[in-house]
Length: 425
Ligand SMILES: C[S@@+](CC[C@H](N)C(=O)[O-])C[C@H]1O[C@@H](n2cnc3c(N)ncnc32)[C@H](O)[C@@H]1O
Ligand code: SF4
Ligand code: SF4
Image (cartoon, helix red, strand yellow):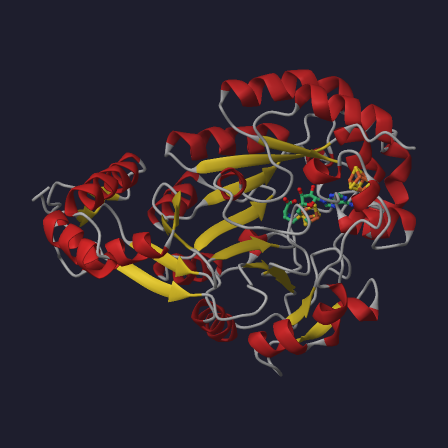
């Protein structure tokens, strides 16, 4: 028990109102903590030995030291197994960064549309009004990241358009990861050279979510399938975490078994989705399978995937969201021009009530806590949730799909109903 302990990597400890968790962004690991856990990490960062920590905690709790030593040993072993702590002195010394979520309700995550520009023109694309020219500048983006980090936001997803089409994208990612923010990027993957992939790895990006729909998929209108497949293999070869987004249609459904088999062999998780009737997506609705057909294939081929959040967030049970993605109560969407709304496909362009303000005019905290939009949509969910036999697993499906398909943001998401096997009374 007299051993010294060190952080294996720079670690972030996020204090919530009633609990806490910590993570390191290297290969991402997450750990839930109670009050004592927070205290132990704080004492380790002040270079206390295990014996000193045990005495301090036993003293303050008026507990038997042997009992505390046993619990402490167990706790430390767990963190060592997760790779967050080590008893070996490393050549580089790492520390623990203490942060607090200062918003109520707690805002955890930002989805940021870095650009609307794109090098492809997919037939199903929901992105409206591409080629917009009033993007936030790098300096405005950095201010926004600083502001969100100060509020305790610890996860950013970058999307577009095509994020890698933006010239300064590496600078944005670097700024985020230097702040130890868990960062992932949604991409069509066609602009990623090997050297670019090495840079992403060096920047310690958390993961890349790449669209891959098979030879007959939408991202293949420019013959990009083989290119994207090669990019996935290049990313995996440098140890990047990759997840695939498949848009399933009548055209590519026969390719699904082979594509999924291949991805499983690469141990690459994937998510299978439908086409929302938004933007170009409206014109190709006839390519969607029926909800029942889709649900059947989804169940048959899904593989260690989660609906919307990063897998680790779900499995470690860190975020208690109302819906699977946390729309309205854990996440915000910021458009290329700084306007804030519910999610990438529930924006001002869909309905003015989804617009909550602009980051260049109001603070993120004010927008999140005081705007009419977030007040109105805070508990947004499926209106049938409480009477639904699979409500507790489905958690309400996708609110955006409900809105775009049925015109009501609280309607049941029939695709989710089919996936989870809802029995209608
Ligand atoms: C809008 S794109 C932005 C990132 C990047 N350009 C890409 O294609 O991955 C994000 C994801 O939305 C999906 N998507 C685009 N239009 C869609 C639609 N109408 N319905 C459902 N998903 C759609 C894409 O296939 C992609 O997986
Ligand atoms: S789906 Fe992605 S790659 Fe395709 S046009 Fe839309 S933004 Fe571009
Ligand atoms: S299965 Fe359907 S009805 Fe039940 S909660 Fe999910 S979306 Fe709502």
